[in-house]
Image 1 (cartoon, rainbow, N blue to C red):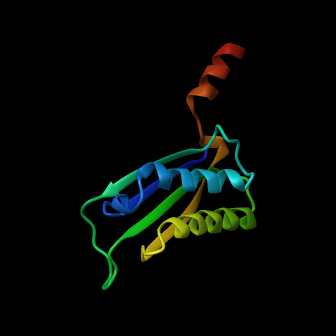
Image 2: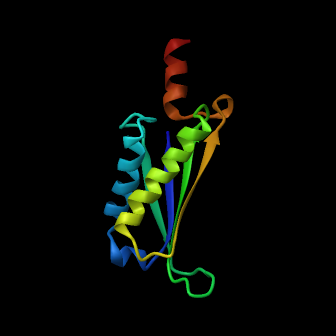
Length: 121
């Protein structure tokens, strides 16, 4: 946790490599101090087929999925930091955006939580 999933038009990957784009998102998230460095996960999914408004060629959108408990200000700072970082890399991309979604702690589960429960019970 957190997970940052990047959807983008395929042509963006000819401007910057997937690794460079993912590192920019990773570094921006880490710099906020909201997450442990080993907890951040980033992945990218390019799309070959998509539709955009008139005069718009490319897009990149980040879905940030984080555990609940951060303030609105912290989430807004995270969003702004990620977009500022991406805008430096991709200044000619007409659509750069992000939204932050929260996981509910009570319903979230992962392997580490299951393994911990089985070794302590």
